[in-house]
Length: 73
Image: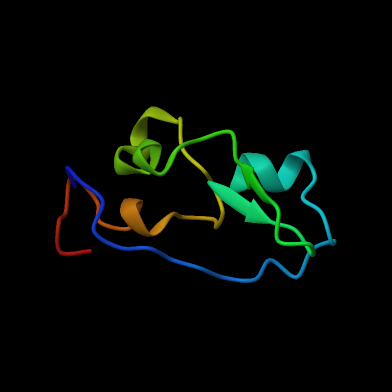
């Protein structure tokens, strides 16, 4: 993947304000008052998750589910 082409929004079911774990796992978090918090990583960091620098909001990020060795996976 060489560019971003999707936005994925979801509810973390977490607390009313993001904690450090949330900020490391997500690009942006919104608290119960609508304040926006920038996460540790930018969305562009998830273009190449093989470098270890990306928001790991799920076990295997969607951008990494296609194996470089086997692009049909």
